[in-house]
Structure formats: structure tokens, C-alpha cells
Length: 109
Image 1: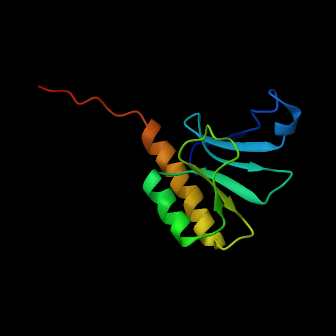
Image 2: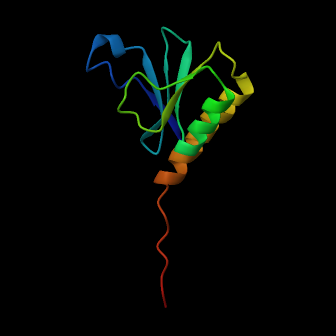
């Protein structure tokens, strides 16, 4: 994915967050995973998409951090196929990329 960076930004708050790997596009988070646990991945989504995903799969939870509005936690060993997880990670990337890509100013003659 073009322009993606990764950081471990939360370790300075508490050592228990040292293993939380966060992926960014345009300096905004779109995906995170705990490198020590590796049983789930959290991604950004939209309210409608979250509802749809919850209706289709049982291995979806709210992230542990309740401040992450419009995020979902996908359990990797559940009923979500790997290709669907990959698609949801890509969709998360697209949501953030599109939201934070600077729009060109339209000049009115």
C-alpha cells in the first residue's frame, strides 16, 4: 500500500503497549495489531460497514480502547476468511487515505 508507515507509538504511555504495531497513511492510523498476541487485527471502518460485518461474522468485536470510534477488531482465528480480512485492511487504508488526501482548490474564473 502506497505511503504506509508503521510505528510502535504507545509504549511511552505504558510498557504493556510496547507490542502494539500501528500502520499509518498520511500520518493517520488505519490498522493495528499486537505483535505479542497476534490473534486479532483492528481496522477503521464506517458505521454501515461495521453493522454489515457484524451481521455476517461472529468473530468481530469492539476494540479494547473505547476511544477508537468506527474501529472493529477482527479475530484472526474466527469465521472471517483471510481474504476478507485482507479486504477489510485495504478498505481501512482507503477510508483514511481518502479522508486525509488534500483536495485541490477549484479556481472559479
